[in-house]
Picture 1 (tube, rainbow, N blue to C red):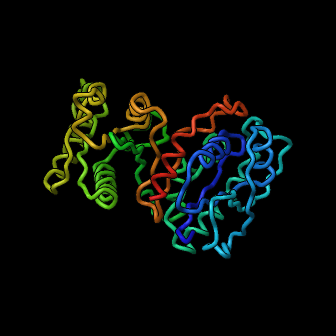
Picture 2: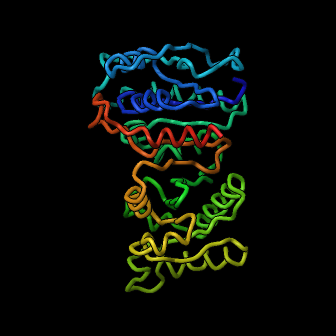
Picture 3: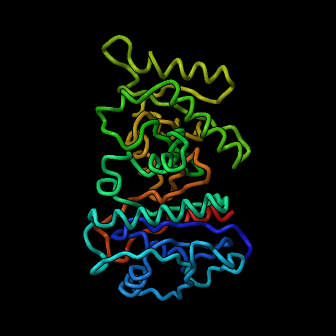
Length: 321
């Protein structure tokens, strides 16, 4: 197997990610070798408790003999993690472990010019508190792209992208700008052209209910409408602003490839209602393609072996092409 590997950071140790990873590699054959960065002890412990049997191929971060890697075994870069037992509550104790995993992954991606990266979920409350809004912004900072990134929840029927990500609702209006709308539309359009050879049809929502307000100088009038007008002049396929309560009806959303919303739940909630976990979270604008399964640590399902691996399978298949 002489193909570029897919680098995987398992993320939060007390999450369902390793469970869905086991399910994904058990039921699917991937052409590219998968390299997971995680604790060997934790991986073995979860395999034993969940009833999975895989041989582990231990490799170092220098990736010697990478051309000989295959997916008959789990290709593991071990990162030590001290734990008493798996399936515990999430705490701040895992922060340094996750940081080590990301550091190794980013070094490998940069040194080898790899472009395929997946990370498992992390706890924003513990890992990113006080520093970054989410992993999208964390990776933007670590790779030096200065937040010129976009979160795209991709589905072949309809993708969505929030203009602002993991910030308080009261702060959303402060973080909307014409420049940000331009950057989002450009990144998404470039992605669709490169991956699918098409210019995407993009709908942009308003911020206020029904795109209306009872005051002068609303965000729609000051920011969103002027941005859309200028983007149309530059031949981008954008329309709007649309009211968020109607754009996701079947008659409306089928006209578009992507819907850009002003804040996280404005577009992610309807997307998950439409497609469940059959979608993947792609960060656009990084030096590599970063994908995360579209779910969190899901601590309520730890150890139950009932988590749905569909989002991770879709992420792996997307990068396996």
